[in-house]
Length: 207
Length: 251
Image 1 (cartoon, rainbow over the protein chains, first blue to last red):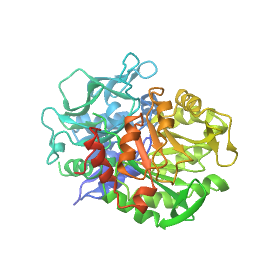
Image 2 (image 1 turned 45 degrees about the horizontal axis):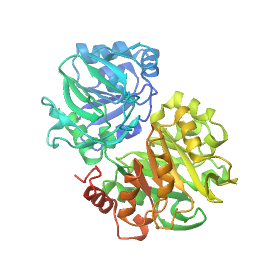
Image 3 (image 1 turned 180 degrees about the vertical axis):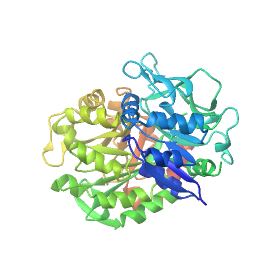
Image 4 (image 1 turned 90 degrees about the vertical axis):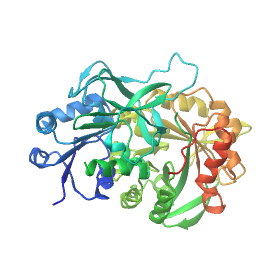
């Protein structure tokens, strides 16, 4: 029996491409915000693009925070957060004031700020950039260190615990990948990173 | 380090991909889904698809074909042409696009960009500016109204302020000529925007891409070169890498 993977639908952007990247692999994938399906799923994916505040508001509106806490923290189901989905599991975001996140990772989400710098770095950070591995993450299995992945974001992690598995340079080095037990997060989009990204998805499916 | 992107740009008309010369004569170059599949297999950095029918006839944007194209893409996909309402953006993103390119609707009302960026985020909003020289001066060009008395850099700054995530800057004079990008135009923009600029129009050889990046483009888009020359996106990147420009190489 193939594993059931739930992609959480909370009205924050393009879930179709995420679904498509999973349907390439040996699993049953469903886009859902149905609590019953999420609790039944073997693995949970939280994708999303857009603002942190809106993301949290939608999660709360759909009463998804409890079910996510139960499935991931209590039941320890493998979890993959992509882009905004990785940001939402941090303690808080400093986007337009402070917004509390799910708090699974001791990190703040802060904006790139190059206002003082002369190097003309652009925000949003859009395009392909390399990830330098830190510690060991099984989702990078068979993917060479410093491979390029597709990023599109203006905010990034400022992390306070040692769970970073990859870093990327945009002006400063920032945390672009994390793992804490059953929780995996990527600031980049594996589903949009061609064959390299699809390998990450397949590594997650095969966990 | 962030890589400079090479982005094939393709035009959609009557369910076919076409290529224009100076925005006028259109030539059919193939079926959109098979073209998308080829670009995906060539591991391109990104794909831009502009639906020219939608923008001129104010028809509904063709969601079916966008869905088919998106299904072939495991790279970022930008869709543009005729996007003028919040509901258009939602439909296009739901069909599988990652970003939308907005032209006339932003020209008509910059408040549309404010609203869209609040709902969908700046990261998915590419504001497209067409530029044509008028009596030796760069002016914004509108397909329906012709040359406007607007400085393109001023317009780009305004879009940035109101929530654009990227600027797609097209030289109408150079578009389809394969004579090279408008370097004078990109020089005018260099250092003046905080958001990335995708320069479009005129690439005919890999050295044109090198020159565009060295003079301030963050990314380059091109169409003609990939359909009517032997050069592939990888050839262009190889030339760029040779000039010490960071690019993403094939895996």
